[in-house]
Length: 304
Image 1 (cartoon, rainbow, N blue to C red):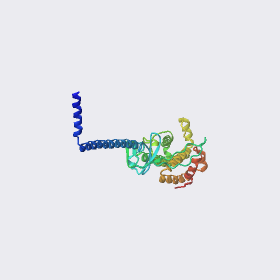
Image 2: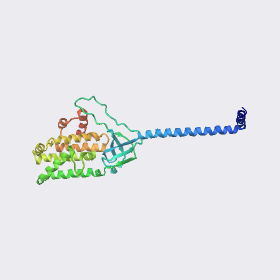
Image 3: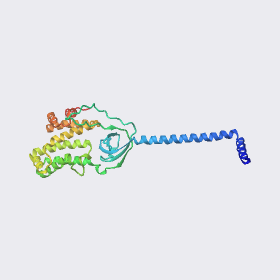
Image 4: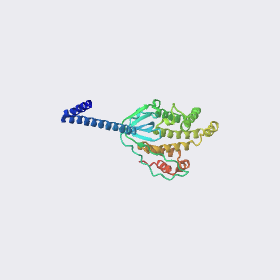
């Protein structure tokens, strides 16, 4: 009992000996720790929130097209993004890239959707526009750097060969190579049609029409012969080329006004040189009324 009394007395004496200023100090220290703990937890929460938002501001995908100052990137969900003001020389088509989005993604301006019918296809959506000065190539497709120039050169050379009737075998071989390249996933100089920019595709399709017309002129019946012997369709190539040209032009007019206007101007030359009529276009149309409206703008040469 006496021992307990002594312990209680010591505790009481201890508290009696504590000054008021000391209590304030202890309270201040406790408050300081509380503030520091709050600052830490707030900072950590902000960091996690920032990381979550940052993850949403990265675009990872493959370069599917490019112009003089832009690239088109397609992500794994098949969403397309237009990135302007980009040094495209260092980013070949087919390369994997990572882009940091600096501003809110701009949704494309789309036309009101019409009711679908059995005669219409899903309309091509314009790519979303993003601003980014930080585009990093994660896997560069270096072998595609000269694809446009090399393939265009091949088409031009083949077109010249077609006019030389003394080179019949070479001309015929060139025609097969070109059709396979355009429509059967063939390769020219190691490249496929998808390795080219839309601008280059439009150029070679225009040349392809010239090659096709020369085959008809200098080697009548040849296309029917190789169609029957190879199992691939080489007849009706003119219609296929025109349809491809119109589809590519329709798509590129969504984001590249200069190439769009040039494609429409070039089509005026093609109309005259290869007897392309509006009735012919309506006959080959397979994308419904909406695309026919856009195709008529190309046919008529209407520019922005």
